[in-house]
Image 1 (cartoon, rainbow, N blue to C red):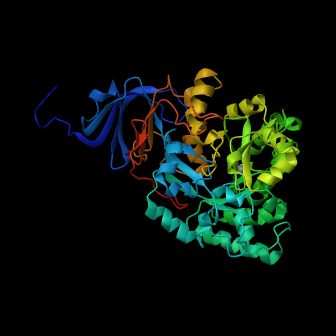
Image 2 (cartoon, rainbow, N blue to C red; image 1 turned 180 degrees about the vertical axis):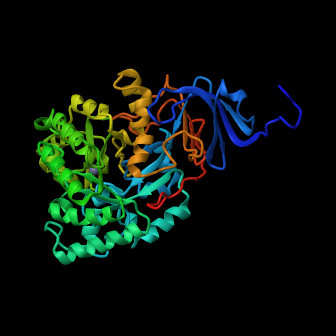
Image 3 (tube, rainbow, N blue to C red; image 1 turned 90 degrees about the vertical axis):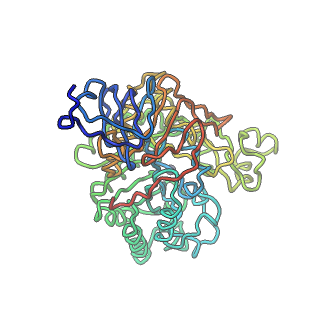
Length: 497
Ligand SMILES: [Zn+2]
């Protein structure tokens, strides 16, 4: 090796070098052994053991020996209700402890801004999933976006605006379809939100305050989003025995508006719907030949939302996740509560309102079929305000990697990682995240593929996962030694990014 100055290669100066690690680059390709150098929040160099001699030497301020570990792009939680939780670093422990570095907020028609409180001072469920009235303190979208940027969250935040919030701002009676003037007001609000940098809008058509919205109402709003090539995410009108019709409606709106569409938490609830995922996935596949249509899923056979009679009736078991009048019932089964009170389940459910529940109502075969469907993305749908949350809040991503990829061999580990990184980034239009490649943002997770596992379950739902060693957000440690580092390096991901 020549050592005279003429032939000597200049060293790359890095903030951090993670060396001798198994790199899952997010593409879905097989992993490779190598090293990853980071500087100024970005990946600046990648090398294999063989290529190291040919590449420039790296002088790093800090080095980590990654032997025995896997390095992946930070996980993107494409479906969350973290609109307000992102302001509190402690509450984001649920996400960082499982390797999540980006959250999409404003889903299921519910967003923290613009506030609906001017017209409806009592929050109509499911708006209360985000918290009490104080969660809706941002009168306009710009205030929320500015507060997010100023807060420097511990994760990156990609916001959407919720249709149900727009409805509640424009309409007194949410049990009706919108009039043309009300629809015009919603379109105006939506345009303002998109101009403020929001990435699109979400609907929650299964919920009482949005049920009365016609297909044309949603279409008229989807067209506004399509004009700026934004994203529409939808908790469809029916995820039970009517799920096939709901998918057909979604495809119809996507086709007529041209909007990029994401079906949220796809599932088939209640025995009458078991097996219908065969039909829905075939419809989605066919539509994907000509439309930009995606879907996400969480890895559990129980759902969770506000207390709703229709959900309870389709469930094998309902566990109360929160109740304002009866907080002592959080974590108890509805059957037990009804017996204790000497009433039927429906009366008990009414007495617990407002509140939330965990509904055991899906079939493993549908869940695995949807998860294994190649385009399916992973999103947690975690509810950070619940007293006894569904374990998906803390366990989703390690559960997919540990339980479903490693233990059940539902797919390869690199396939599972792609479903929570590059594929999600592509759906969201994020060009510089979701992959390990030179120049990409250094959102990274170092984990042990042999031990990664979810520890949260229905009995102990707020347990950090096992096997996540280090989480970097924009190149800075956010989770290390099984603890939050306390620093916030997340950014707001605006539509124009
Ligand atoms: Zn939803």
